[in-house]
Length: 324
Length: 308
Image (cartoon, rainbow over all chains, first blue to last red; front, side, top):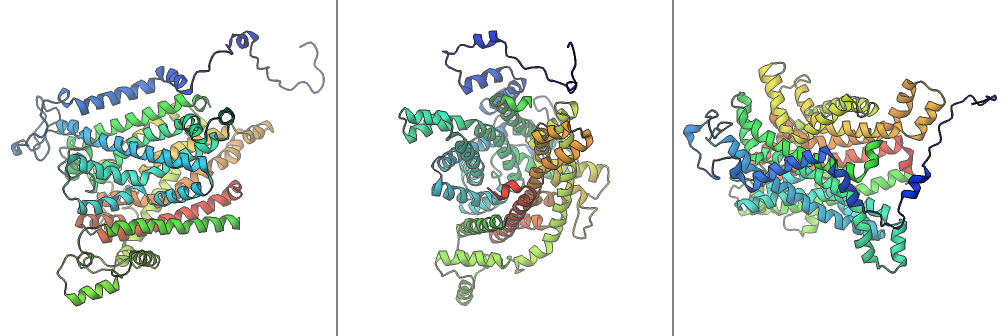
């Protein structure tokens, strides 16, 4: 700077320049890559994503090929003389009070617990997306009706609602097999968890339906329905997918909490919730604690897997949020 | 402001009616004879049957019965347990303990959650932030009753700092450990919400202005960042007071706290569905009322809400 005039001593930020060469390098004719492809590009390089995938792959293997993890066959009749037996070859964490293999219980329990999480998520997501999209897109009375209706279900805390629903259904259908009991827990959770997705979907649709590309689609003759299906819903999906993935983990925890209260899956069904519920007697005595630690750890790791996956997808879909 | 208050009050009515309708339908879905259910599955004479049917409006149309159910809930007439104790007496005995427990949990949640969340938000991506993130993710992943049992074992049984179970002659000191466990259930979300909120405000225009006019960093953080960041957090914590009651069922059972959650658990274990529904109805009413209050406080704190 050659000379400084009065009043010019203050700091002046450097001009942010985009070099002309970079602007020239942009190929205008190229179709811009879609949101999902870009997200996948970012996901591929994310450590968090692969870590979550690894966890979930191990859990999936546990569900579909339990024999890879334990030599104890499913539904082995427990032997009482094994009660609280110590860890031995083929039984890495010893035995429960009833003489069941702790590790085998945890392996076979994965199926019911994850089934509850996955099915509940599928139901809530479908219900929430449809109602939310309709409410946001059509507005007016439709919106008010759906919003007030979802408020009602939202006003009852999830766990309280499930307690009532399941204690009623337990009396109505006392004996209902594996899928029947999974279904009851799933229905109870889904019935009161969908409003969250509805609210989110509604908000996203409201934001998107007034954007220019929707006007453009209307201008070239897209019908209302086609607009909603082809242009609005796909663009509103991102936040819903993130919430759904994270809540999948939350549902698994909720099933365990319900089992602890004696209202989850019935005793005969192998699940982490039931393993933990059986373990509570042990905890007070402070002995044979791996009866609790093993199912608690497998459950926590699975839930963590889903939460981390949700976080990784969130970052990939919205890279701005991370930089902030 | 008054327009907003009136609108919000009006919105509470359908929510309350709808919630009672859901609970009422569930109560009606119970299998078996409703009279036998009322009498605790003991055989009843025809006179008693008629009297009960008249008392509980069992012969009226369902719509009238639902209306009666909602009216009873509003007047705290929740019927009786199988043992013949009015459910509202049971609630009156147990609810104060739960309120003390929930308030303690709320305080712990607010102090620790906001404190840790603020530091994490101010030093984003530092070691403190990263470890707070890992800890909060772990706390979300582990079911709260496992945390409860482990804490009971460590602090109650092994170290002997507090009594592992509370029992009927409780003191505030006894409730500290259950309150911590109850707080942990929401703690992780408070940390994350505070962190995001602080981070968002740090890059807001009004904070840049505050810095530009030469305020010290301490003043900027205290008066401009924190005050604005806390609005959503305060709302979240307030709404929690209602949902803490759901958590109370588990925590009170583990620590044998003589609160409303424990009463609900006992009713579940005994299969007294009517009592369970009555207690849950009461909890839902408290929850709806709390949400209303919190929304009104939110409107006072954040003027933007009032004019939407």
